[in-house]
Amino acid sequence: MKLIKYFAISAALLGMAACNDDKFTDVIPMPEPTEDNGGGSTGDVVASSRDEQYRPQVHFTPAANWMNDPNGMVYADGVWHLYYQYNPMGNDWGNMSWGHATSNDLFHWQEQPVAMTPNQYGDIFSGSAIQDKDNVAGFGSGAILAFYTANGERQQQCLAYSTDGGMTYTQYEGNPIIPNTDMPDFRDPKVFYHAESGQYIMALAKGWDFSIDFWGSTNLKSWTKLSDFRVGIDRCNKGQWECPDLIKLPYKGGEKYVLIVSVNPGGPASGSGTMYFVGDFDGKNFTADELEYPAWIDGGADNYAGVTWSNATEGRSIYIGWMNNWNYAGAVPCNPWRSAMTLPRQLQLVEFNGAPVLTSQVVSELDGIAGELTAATDGVCSGGDGYEMIVKLDPSENRTFTIGNGINESVSVNVNPAAGKVILSRTSTSGNVAFHGLFSIPSMSAPYDTSADELELHIYTDHSSVEVLSSDGLTAITSLVFPNVPYDRISGVEEVSYRPLKTVW
Ligand code: FRU
Image 1 (cartoon, protein in one colour):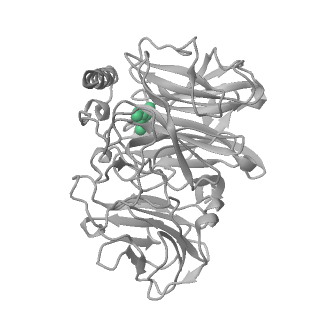
Image 2 (spheres, protein in one colour):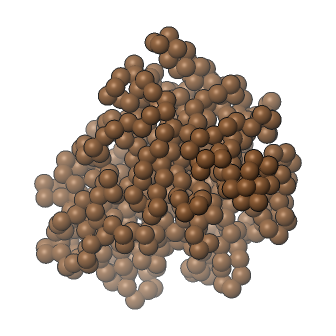
Image 3 (tube, helix red, strand yellow):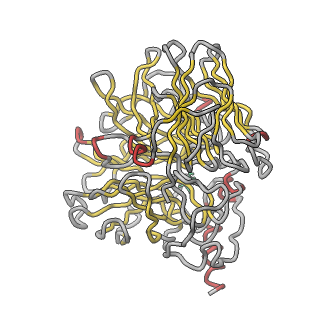
């Protein structure tokens, strides 16, 4: 038994050596699997009361073990599926598999058995899923098709399908559907249907080549390269490009395409970040409008590798990100699990200062776990497992306030009209920062509308995170924090109202 695991781990490490990526070659060897770390099993759901220190109460986390990118997000037959990069055997990156959780409301998640584990082509890296309602691929109508990167000697694109509602997957016998013989980084397929050209499109990231490939298919099995997209902007090319998504959004009576690209390092705060380009897609080429790039989905340090759900209800674009950063993800002091997802957010394109800007707002399903809107006495919130705190400010006034707890641990937030930014500062006063030298970040910032009548910030606190979003969606700053006591108050603002959020576990 021990020997088999040793080989599985070595194979994973060898696989990593094939890809040109520091964060993967730096892997900490797997701990011996034990019952406590969820090891010894590649399929079972591990039990946990999910009440450990730092355990998020309103964000998704697996009961045990390491998680990174959201994968294969698809809404099918009334169920929201969230797959994710998962190590079924420990709390560090490795043995990459697709963990799986399902939900009826995007907040209450039921963890399901691990959906895919490493196979002859390698580890199961990130990718996407669609529901094949018309049986285009021939695996049955309504089958869920998962497109992922097999990370072995090379990174190649593979297809697996599920005919039992996304619970178990069969590997397509014609894998890899897009072989690769020469590229070191070639991964994270995101597939969607492009009605205008009558074909499926796959976006693929080419890491250190700083480009996104577009491939097309009419049967979901054979794929032809259409084009690639790159920009000659240094600040967009500071790190490798990963996890693309191309979405169509309404804009000013028409439609625009938004290309989402995660980049690591070179993010807005430090390390990982998620940028986007606005433009048009004609079924072959994506052309970016001339705007100021990089534009970031979120100015915080902890929103990475996010993409949107396929087939979301009411045509919404619903996004979820990995709430972490490759700079310190392996060191965050969480046990026996490591990493959470952001709150699910709806993306929209709005005009701001004459240009299209991608906005993020927490999905309205939050109402299902939120209590009554209440005025906070002295800025203190109570009765929740997490909070949505609401402050209304004068956007033309420079003002600093803190979000924290009753034992003087806090992050500070500065609304700075001269900079046109909301600036969040996470230093040693925020709680535990000692676990990694790069965790303390004095300045993470995102733009806000200085000319509005009012700036309304919605601040979502959980046991180890703070998400600062504005009501118009222009501002988004996501930050992990590790305080000794969860944040439940705001100081430095006269009027704070809040909604207590109920645990989803
Ligand atoms: C992004 C990423 C992806 C890759 C996965 C591996 O965080 O590096 O590009 O598929 O993680 O776990």
